[in-house]
Length: 126
Image (tube, rainbow, N blue to C red; front, side, top):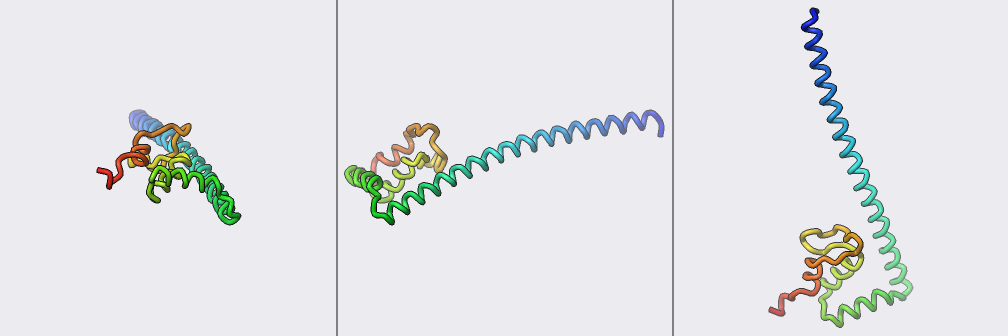
């Protein structure tokens, strides 16, 4: 093997090494994002299980006064059962609009699209 061939092979190997390094960095970033998403989902899942357990035990004990008050308030507003369910989801901190449905509302900020779904024109009111 002459010097020219060795130099060409060395350059080719350096290029391959640089490309592989970029791929490893890219995979590492994707892995980090997946870990963060996984952790967020685990926390959300834990929170929702706690909510289910709280509602289940309150229902079994017959002491679901908070839910009763919220339901009574929504009845006073004239909301249908479906809108009441959406209101509970919204009050739990999740979007109910078609733009961000199911995503957690950061710092419980208000979303005009979600509020429009809850309190906007009802189909029969037109």
